[in-house]
Every structure is written in C-alpha cells, then in structure tokens.
Image (cartoon, rainbow, N blue to C red; front, side):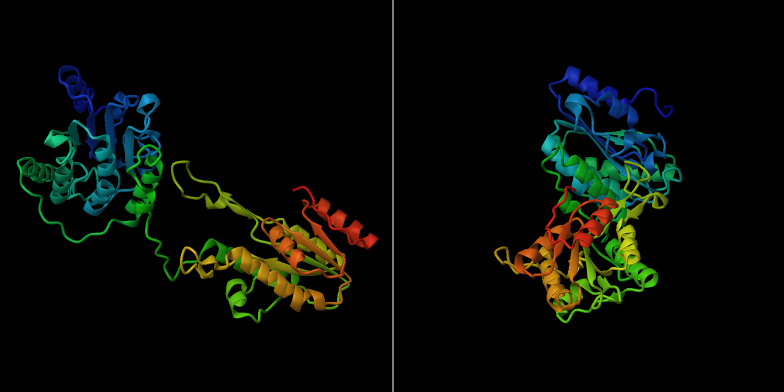
Length: 432
C-alpha cells in the first residue's frame, strides 16, 4: 500500500521454508502500523504464526480498515494463526507492550513452538517518533527482544522496517542489537499498564482463547476498581424508577424492619396511598425491563447512547392500574448484588439472591398484603419475578382470591378486568 510493495519478511519466510528444514515460523510485528500485507500472505497458512501489535484507532489509523482488528484471526487451516493486538489510541508505552507480551504474545508463541522467529522491527512506535505518537523506549524494545530470543533455540532474525525519527531508530536498534549479542536488557523501572491497554489485552485474550489453550482471559481481566464517584447501571435505573413512581403516581416507599432486606432492597418497593383500604390490590413483581443497546461498531464496546434505551412496559401497566382505580404494590426484586453475602466456603449453603427475593415476598404478604382490606389480590410476575411469586404461593395458602398472570400487555389488562368482574379465584398460568 505504498510503504512497501514486496514484504521483506514474508518473502524471507517462504524462502526459508522452501530451502531449509525449518517450516514452523513466528513473525512478530511491532511496527506501529498493522502489517496487512504480511498477514494476508499467510492468512490461511498454519505453518506461519503472525502476531502484530499496532495502532488501530477503530480502523481509522493507517493502513485503515477492519483487517487489523482483533477479530481477524485467519481463515481455513490458518484460523487462529493471525493474532492482532490493536491499540485503540496513541500514547502506548513500555508497560502496555510488555503487558501484551506477557499475557498474549509469549503464551501463544510458546504453545506454537516456532523453529524460527522473525521480528518485523519497525521503530515507529518508539518514544520520539512523531508519526506513531507512542512511547516505547529502547529498554522496552530490548526486553521484548530478550523474551523472543528464548524461543526457537535462539534462532532470531530482526528485520528493520518502519521508523521516522533517526534518533529513535538509532537508540532502539542499538538496544536490540545488544540483546542479540548476548547482553542482558537494562533494568526496567516500576510500571503499570494503562487502563485502555489492559482492556484491549483482555478483549484479545477473550478472542484468542478460542484457539490457544495457553491464553487465559481470566488472568487478563482488568481489575475491578470501581471509583467512589461511579454509579452502576442498576443503581441509575432504580433511582430513575423511584423518582418516576414518586413524581408521576405519588407512590410511597414500603419500609423493611429486617435490616438485611432493607440493605438489599431499600427504595425498591413502593405502593399507592390507598393500599390498605382499596378492595382490589394489584401486586406487580419484577426486576428490570429490557435494556437495548446499540454499539458504535462490532469491534468495540462503545455504546451509541442516543440509540440505547430501557424498554419498560410497566409504565403502561401502572398507568392502567391507576386509571382503573385499583391499589398497586410495585416490587423490584433486583438486589444490590454487591451486598449479597458470599458463601464462607465452597460447601456453605448461604442464601442466594433468589432466597432473599422470596423472603421479601413473604415479608410483604405477612406485613402488608394480608392486612389490607382487599377482597381480590392480583399477582403479576414479570421475568424472574414469576418464580418468586410461585415461591410465595407454595409457602402461604391464603383464602383470598388470587390471579397469577404471566401474559403480555395489553391483553393482560382485559384479562384481569374480566376475572375481577367475575370475582374468580382461578390460578391462571399464561404462555409468555
């Protein structure tokens, strides 16, 4: 594509395979640009393992397009023998490259067990190269070379490719040459890979673990450091729902006397103000609605926020209940999962989220529902809430008429109206 018309390393690999007993070859490409020509040459060839670390920028960095993405893993017999570690932005440095080497490059290379290693050694990711805009130091290049020199019995070729700063090329080439001649690489300063690098390496590990047993995504998973200023999606949705019910329908919060239930479900159970006096009580048990999210690209996890939303049919249901003049008890049984106690050991029979949800329903039945003046109680379960209602019915056998509805809206409203008018106590289990 202009930088080279014949890929030096690709030609060399084929010549070596044809003229020597060496057949299994690793190409490690640390040039800041994706070696699309080299990858294409061996895309269906399992005798050549191609691994590239490069700037990708969502396919917008030269040579552009999706071929350098982590999803380009080869085809046919060569599936799994192309490994791309695509940095999503500029500025990657020693800690990022060495993290990728230790987590992806070396485990796969050792499993492949090459008979020869060839480095496409472009130095345009070097610190000081204005085109690559990355910050790999001569020491970083030395350590990567040192790791690769432990493969293939030391059979290592370094082929100079890109690089647009003479000073950076000189310093980096010298550091690599010293390692080839047997010198130990310089001591590294303490360093930690950036968040974007660890996220990228983890995603690559998820992809490559399909092909290589030595790649363990769990070991690459970014640390779950949740800052104090952050809010989880469930927290935001719960707050939104609480505000909506209070503001739009003037509903009230049901308190829990039991501390463990209050900690897990506070502000998630609300009722209309006529709950104790209305003759008809609708109990709606649910978790969240359906989250629908659209991604910017199949290659990234970035959401298109304007096209992502929560589908919550309960707004229609609650509106219908209020319009019909019934009392409503709204129960959101999605717990604060971080507060659910963990088992003390693998054999412990600690409660899980479903157990606590069932406790909530029994608490509400004993302390509110059974004490109301309602002569007809309609239980509506949505999603996992249906199972919690079944748990309740299995443990409490009250004489009040009960309807268990698991149908879809709006037919559910007509069905409830007919059953209430008939004053039926039938237990109905719908289809969806």
